[in-house]
Length: 126
Image (cartoon, rainbow, N blue to C red; front, side):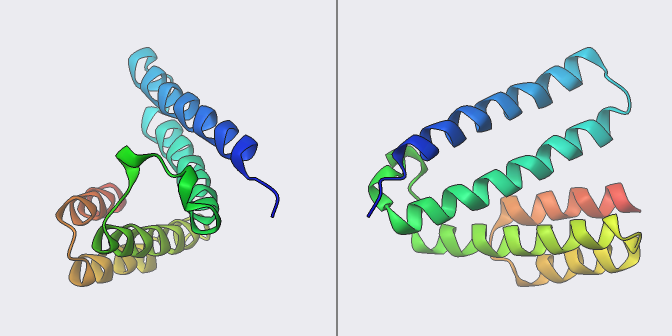
């Protein structure tokens, strides 16, 4: 099997750069701040999904500090799935369905941090 290490390293750099870009958007007040940060956040979600696929194929590439328990992995997977679906609904102009998607996630997720992010998204969409 071809090693995915070079791609993995590029994605780690890209993730760091996107994270820094979101922080810079906030500190520079590039308007609309929330929309710009949300766009960067969407890119990060997609990047993390690719990283997850890499780790599934080559788990030795996953940084030990990021190694999640099976329960955390399930929570992350569920959160990613619901968030992508909610963002697609929002992009299609159906904010009511996006809010419902986040509400459903809150009822299903055992993860407090993920539920709090979903609640923040509900507030943003209200």
